[in-house]
Length: 253
Image 1 (cartoon, helix red, strand yellow):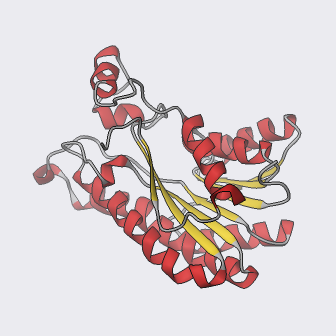
Image 2 (image 1 turned 120 degrees about the horizontal axis):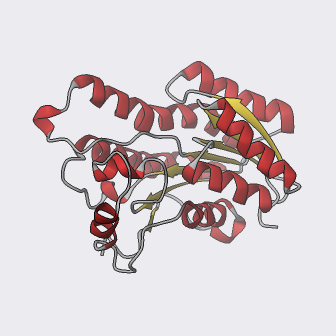
Image 3 (image 1 turned 180 degrees about the vertical axis):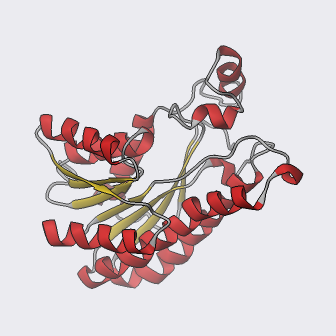
């Protein structure tokens, strides 16, 4: 198993990409802290992992709060003695909106979750990894950082920020043997998908419109991103750091 004996934290772990990644890391032998503001959802994912023979614990955490970020890392270290993988996956989408209609509260909410949340994860996780002289810090970015869609300018900016943050952190932590990598999914079949489409729920028109932009002819499933996260967290990716890995079916070509 590629992550045997390692300790991982996955934020936004109650659903979608986070839940799939937590399950995949556990299958590969990691002990996983499933973190989310949705504590009940996180506990449900933990129950699935444990039924499959894995080890996990649910922690309620709001990634925009420094105290929650610090406690999250401290609990992982206290429980399992270290921290090998931090997957900063939690984030929020943007309803399709022209820039003149975006209010400050929306801008602040998106930047707090998608940028500040990653920063706080790094602030508390990376010192542990530096001391250990090992570790992998992963970030869910987006193809919006590379090829934005109309009406999602704040979301695109937030994801562009964390792609650059990944590069800066990779330079900072490389002397300590720590790697930092961003993952850029194309639209993924998660609870956020209707918001990106500007719909209350996914329908045939919205799905056809989005699929038409992907050369491989389908959207991501959460498991596509989970498989990438496991690879990047493993020693198979030992020379990958500072990169933004596009998992997009060719959308950004």
